Amino acid sequence: MTERRYLVRTFGCQMNEHDSERIAGLLTADGYVPAAEASEADVVVFNTCAIRENADNRLYGNLGHLRPLKQANPRMRIVVAGCLAQKDGGLIQERAPWVDVVVGTHALPGLLDLLVSAEAEGPQMDVREYTEVFPSALPARREVAHHAWVSIAVGCDNACTFCIVPLVRGAQRSRPVGDVLAEVQGLARHGVVEVTLLGQNVNTFGRDLTVPGSARRPLFADLLRAVNDVEGLRRIRFTSPHPHDFTPDVIDAMAESEKVCEHIHFPLQSGSDRVLRAMQRSYRRQRYLDWLEAIRGVITDIAVSTDIIVGFPAETEEDFEDTLDVVRRARFDQAYTFQYSPRPGTRAATMDEQVPKEVVQERFERLVAVQEEISLERMRDQVGRTVEVLVEGTGRKGGVQGRTRMNRLVHLPGQIAPGTFVAATVVSAHPHHLVGEQVRVPVAVG
Ligand code: 5AD
Ligand code: SF4
Image (cartoon, rainbow, N blue to C red; front, side):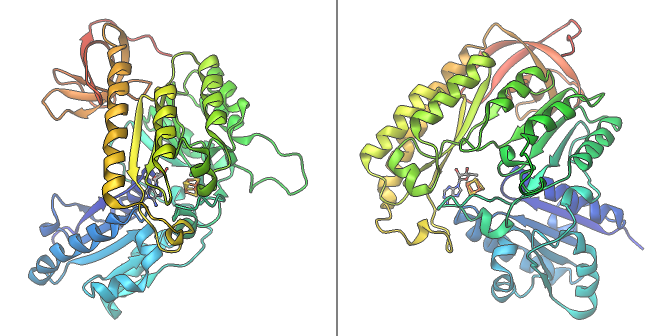
């Protein structure tokens, strides 16, 4: 019998990349091997994202492309997983009846069984609302050997009015500290040198684990310290904290834990107090800026990235100017900028005064221009410095690429194995990457 092959295509956030590693792990455990392209795959999985509207269109476009391939290869099984599967459920097979399995975010552990049932009985769907099994507990097949995503909590207890995440991923459920540590220890033993701890709101990690009425402990800071003690690990990242629940003990834990990288992703969303209120984000612009100052006061050289939404319902020019103002003050290293996209089922989708598309586009371009300039200035500050780069793989322009502790992308000439730490001098800067030259001395560990 020829080998059975699979292809997983991931759309969306790091949580999805993490889940894709589990999907690949489950299929590998069942004897599948990776396929280079869809035409030679027996199982094609789309791991989808629901956060913005164009995700829907892209999914149906991609499914349309697969249809003739499936007609040519009737053995092919098509799986739609992830947030869009969770959200749309049966709608997907209604619109694309050639989809064999729809598997929601909570049903991932049952993927192989669903494939078997699809073989015998035809199209299957499982979009259950809850499961005891954390995706992190499933086998993983990772893209790179040196880095791993580690989920510490799934779901979100906030209710930002633009966001579909609480509707598809449910309430927050934290993973027991012991499970997280055991996973990280196992990963480190197998050569993983960098982990990224994942949660929708890492600050509230553990809130659902503590006994109601008992003294609440700042568990995320404790967790950072405990992960920092894992032998063999060299870098710890995490995403994302929420400005609303951020606490100073996290800054202290970051500063004291030498493996925790000097980078924080701190989602702003808007710089207008009026819009923040309408978004149901409970901090205000000044509070946000104060937090940044406090963080930079303790960790003086830290990179800050953020998420910003432009064109939230009823956003005025003045509100938008407020966002530009915070952006200029905050001096982010990087900003992920999004045009507001109404998600059915969220509060904001039914708010009056949706901002016209052209206005959103125009503001978006202005915001990107301001941020690009700041990003470039921040990158230029790096020229001439020597930085530690963890090589990730081949770069787009030949050579290799890797990341500094502050999460800056660096291109280096030559061939260096992924997972290698090198010291590099930064020779030039661009808004989204640096170009470096390897320094021929051993890198100090730390
Ligand atoms: N429209 C635009 N951007 C959104 N995000 C979340 N929901 C929406 C939406 N409806 C952005 C937020 C979030 C990031 C992951 O995606 O900025 O932090
Ligand atoms: Fe969505 Fe807000 Fe939860 Fe983030 S914190 S996942 S933006 S509801």
